[in-house]
Image (cartoon, rainbow, N blue to C red; front, side, top):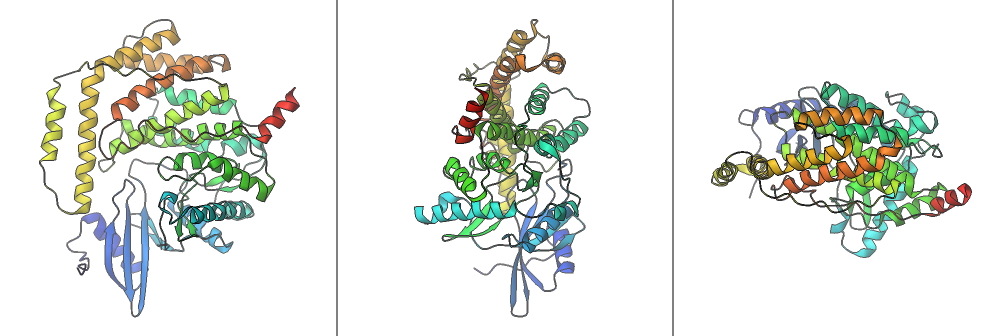
Length: 469
């Protein structure tokens, strides 16, 4: 079937703006323009100019209420620097103004190593990926300083160079709203910087994202939270990516990196940066649970906030050598009429929509309806369990969830490392109940019940233990 050429006069308003901007940036005839079915606005387009056919991707900001640590302009400039140094990345053609977006080539290939053609191809791509990362980590840092990225000095600045700016964004977005979970995670991250890690490099942070074709890596993608930090943090990012796109054994990827660079990686520091990078996701996404934009995929953002926060607490527990038990599932105890949520889901299931994007929008709405239904059905039981757990920490049972948040924030601000184990257990249970509610909430809730790949103790860990003794 021949695809119909997009007509800017009949496109949805945002698509029409992209069409107009793309026409000005790249000469030619736009024969295809398709919005991707995902929470970040992005479009794939094909442009024909004479005998030349160009496939491009247009990448816009995540949403009007989302604030990230790097501007779109800086993202585009990062691509230019990496391309200059031989790192395979999509070539960026330029920026669009309304909406703000940058336009880059579509690289050939596919994502997700689980789809590789053979085990041999998978092994080859894994090696190439680590070799590409090692080369990227050797790029002189003054090139990134020239585009406005902060260059840290010393282990503390290096460790916190992404986490601290994201915490400041979080404070701005929350506008004083008390939220004990992120207060605890942030204070733990500040108190437990790996002081022995003093190497800094440009790192992708949200690592493990690349395209491949056959047995060949075709390029790295996605630098929206890239920064100058500890290269070891890449392996923390890989643990999160592995939740959606299996990367294979991360421990052996660490072995290959050590052999290439001579850098000695330790489990404790990877767990630290796992907590830190999960905190970044929490800092940027939890505010959307309280103040979403109209187009946000609410349940997807909430699912990612809960999932990454669970992993942050698990990483903290690993550092504490604390075993976290399974969380009891709540019994049904509805807040209001229990039939309402199910009726909303049934209503949405009867709606008919046109086109892939229309079906995506309906899927978002259905996930939200399922979530609201489950939250209503188990709401009173969850609130009671939360307040009972808060009483164990505070000594007195708060009168409401709002009072609990305020009291816990005050407690955490005065607490030290001696309270870490008790607080980790509290938030493990609090998050476990949110994870339970999200389970079964449609396509947008895809992280429930998932735990990160385990990092084994390494030679560097054993060396530190011997030095300490």
